[in-house]
Amino acid sequence: MLISLHVKNLALIEETEVNFGEGLNILSGETGAGKSIIIGSINLALGGRADKDMIRNGAEYALVELVFQINDSDMINAVRSLEIPIEEDGIIIIQRKIQQNRNICKICGENVTARQVKDLAELLIDIHGQHEHQSLLYKKNHMDILDSFAGEELAKQKDRLKEQYALWTQIKKELSEFSADGGATARELSLAEFEYNEIEEAGLVSGEDDELETLFRRMSNSRNIVEAAQKAYQLTGQSASDAVGHAVRELKGIEEYDEKAGELAGELENIDGLLNDFNRSIVRYMSDMEFDAEEFSRVQERLDLLNRLKLKYGGSIDKVIDYHNDLAEKISRLQNADEYKKELEARLQNVYKELDKTCEKVSSIRKAEAKRLSADMVMALKDLNFLDVRFEIQVRKKEEISSNGSDEVEFMISTNTGEPMKSLGNVASGGELSRIMLAIKTVLASRDRIPTMIFDEIDTGISGKTAWKVSEKLGTLAGSHQIICITHLPQIAAMADNSFRITKQSSGSRTVTSITAMNDDEMVEELARMLGGEDITDAVRGNAKELIDTARRKKAENI
Image 1 (cartoon, rainbow, N blue to C red):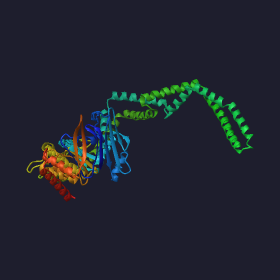
Image 2 (image 1 turned 120 degrees about the vertical axis):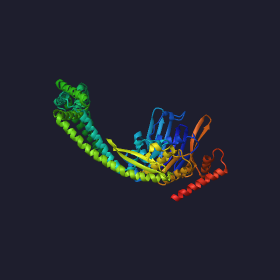
Image 3 (image 1 turned 45 degrees about the horizontal axis):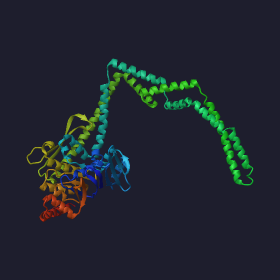
Image 4 (image 1 turned 180 degrees about the horizontal axis):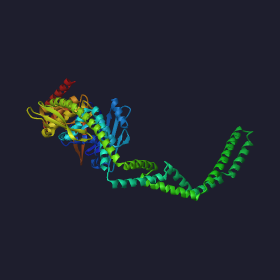
């Protein structure tokens, strides 16, 4: 779950830290206090779009830090499979620092890419933004929801489908580009044969260019090499050997007085032997370095040829060799154009048959899971005060195939008795859409492993009894997930396991947004503010206490 959020120098936030708890965490506050900044900062830490204008006026940088605690071993293994660092105790610290010209993402102190952060976020948290329920208006999103519900069995078939579809489109493209025109084929064949013969005549050997480059450098600098070797020979030659020999004799003359002198003399004798070996080796080295103009010219010409081929056909000898092999296959295809075209057509037909079979399997799974999801959705929607609701997921076959298969998925709903089923996008109001999305999130949560869910204003367009139903649903969901929810409704705020108030205050010429945890008394005052507005009376406080008692009673009944 999300343990803490630390924000510094972001928009109106100077610096604040909040420690979240298990269950339902409610964030409330006056309109314009900056509640969206809190959720926005979490999104930012998880790879959301960053802009230098987010940095608080006068500050050099903005910083957002999230601390997660993971106890589930499967989840820990999933994180490690992404090659993302994690502390031994399951702690994950995500940090994002935004500066004027750059921003840095870190996980547990190690620099990471925004892609890695987003991949991690998909495992740890599900964020429902203020307008996400509007996505239900578009049919293209219905399939994603159904497929997410269907789970691993469908995911495996979809992976297979994507591979087959990619192969099918590749063969189709190759077939469409394959020209049966005799003149074009002849020109292609002539060019391919020319290139093949040019590479073939070169007789390339892998790694040959590196060896020749080394030889060329040595031969080009042979004069400098020989001069340096001669100097080394002079410095370590006969005079050095004589000096060492003289030193050996001096030490041996005193070894009868001290054994250590004899040991030192032995070391010098070894040095003398090494010097003699070195001198013989450097003489041979200088002999080998004799400049051969003819050999140098041959090496230079060979290098020029290899570099020209590399520039023309691939950048390295190995790539040129690979291109040479590809040309052999291309020449064979062009020489047998009619046969190759027939082969492509046969492959395309076979791949399509397999692709069509996989589409049927995918469609079959979707239809079965659509019935299950529809039944679960009806139950969830009734819990959210859709009393006479009917919900159906239609899986229809399309003419064309895509990487998602041959299905078209659409959510259908009827919210009142006697009304026909209609497309979700043509029926639901804003308040209904937010409840439908909550129902979807609740149903999906029963199948996914995401530990933390965030709802930003899930209470749009609802009140009264419906607000209580939404509150109860969030309370139930909080029994298995950590929920962080921004709300304006006292019915939802009363259900909190942990309450936080977001405030905005002016200090001199600066405006500061902060977030603080509330105790029971402060929670009563906050609910009274939601209920009574500017004038908070004892009667309003009594109503607030009654709301909290009712919420706690309902939570106890659900345990």
